[in-house]
Length: 341
Image: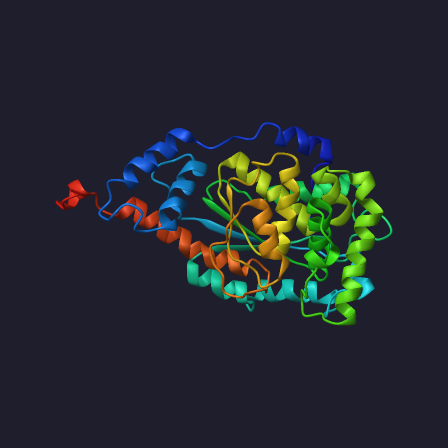
């Protein structure tokens, strides 16, 4: 993680208080054009709603999708030492090198959908603290990680897909969800990299201990929950989501852990994820529960659970088809086709 200006969560809260909402005039233009295209009303199903959503949050009509960016944030977690993952923490750095070399699944998917992949390595040599003992991050560490994530939203991109890499981060994601939405640790804690049996019970116990340690002090404050139970890469995802809203860039969230990171922002404003879609439904069992809590319906359901932004990257193709159909189809008038009787 490269140095960034000193920051605080109080500054993040001030920023969030003045975020733009939907562009309703642009939405009206999108709805009006959709009704003139050479097809029965609703015939393209969800693609029609996605084109409207893209236009509404880009604030432009027709919407466009020429420069999608896939941002993968990587960080290490102190709780990995508690044996909550099937893989050692060294794998985080090894996978970052694999991304850079072009050898990961997300590299191939980005190539197939013509998307720009950026990988953001966040202090891998310095993991977060063990959240069963103390907060994962200090106020400044969390805010600096969020500020770093904001840097992914560069001028000229028209869609941001966010993903993560970090051994033990499904444990952090489960802790975030348990703190945000209640239930039991088992409701939110799944196999992640493939743990089962005693290892899964140990993972659930870590989630329970972390939430019990911090729930009273965090209260319902989403940023405090993120600071105490999250990780550098998860804070960066939350920061990127905020920056995208400021820049009018729609967002695709990847799977369970990325969605959990973004979910912390809904405690600041329940509408703060309105410019986001979930790219795919992870096979991690709690992702469906989390999406239901947020009122977000994933675009794809392929049984994937890889992380690294792979499902969100794949969903870029769906959004591109929605945008191209909306902008490129002929109208009844243009094509000389009779409209509905």
